[in-house]
Image (cartoon, rainbow, N blue to C red):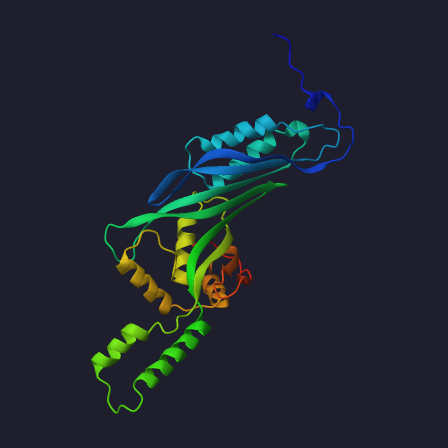
Length: 304
């Protein structure tokens, strides 16, 4: 039992002498800590990690080294671009015998945030924001990209206009020939018939990615989410009572948008972020297909 254990990844030579772009692992369960001003939480992540294998004669990399280094992310220190940069460099250093010069890491995690109701005091619930984090260190160049998915409600402007026309026609027919209309009578008609036609609305989502600066101490997730939610104006709610549902209906009615409107609003809200990319999707209730739009990246800037 005291004999040295064989390590064929070192002693054996690859049967086919060729370099490999990336080698590593996918789907590693990992606890990670996300901390930002006013927020700190331990969350469950799934991690993918790889290094390059440029040496054609090396049979295999050291998976256990990558795993153990990745495990340091789960030891309570909050995620940051600076910390990820250091981790990737350490992974490369651990594979000098493989001539590795590059490493990359992907984390998928659901960011849990408690959100208050629109109107009701002391009422709130949890909302989950899917996050994807891609960090790479390739030939000395560090890149860290953060992607968030934000759900919101969208009400179709065209459908709203068509609905208003039908309500207008119904109102005119109901009071045709009357020189004056009593306020109470008009209010009673509206109370009963204002939903004669209703515009279609649907749950929608925005997938937004931006670059984080390498020296940043936080990922800036919450400020990014806030920018997106303020831009669309109708983020989906958690716990609600009737007053909150009514307030949400009012927000939708005053905030009509096509998928193109949503993409442009978010694009404008992200001015100053580095290489933003925006994909919005409205899960149509009128059609069995979705309406989608992409926004072109804005000029590079600095995180604000």
